[in-house]
Image 1 (cartoon, rainbow, N blue to C red):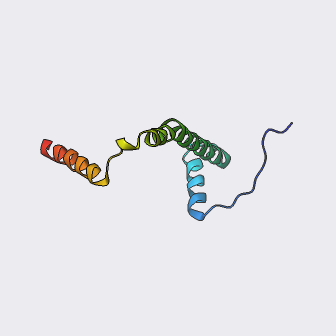
Image 2 (cartoon, rainbow, N blue to C red; image 1 turned 180 degrees about the horizontal axis):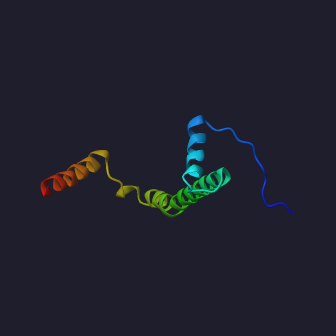
Image 3 (cartoon, helix red, strand yellow; image 1 turned 90 degrees about the vertical axis):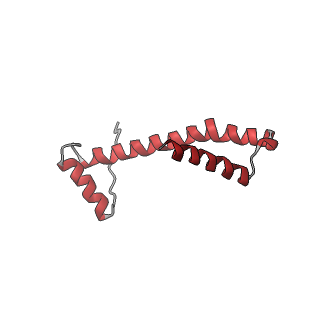
Length: 92
């Protein structure tokens, strides 16, 4: 049973040169390894975004919907950011 599949892909010249340079430098043995590593990185990024959405964004939205009275006005946010910035500048 075959566990790989051959694909023919077309890349912009700059990306194709980058793939070839990675192989030429010895960092990767083949162009396929470069592409596989790039796809693994893309999968990891997608998983990290999904985790962030599930663990941070959704609970924050739930909290906002449950307690809208805790939200700050844009003016209050700006005041707090300005105060933080002033503290940072004063330390330097």
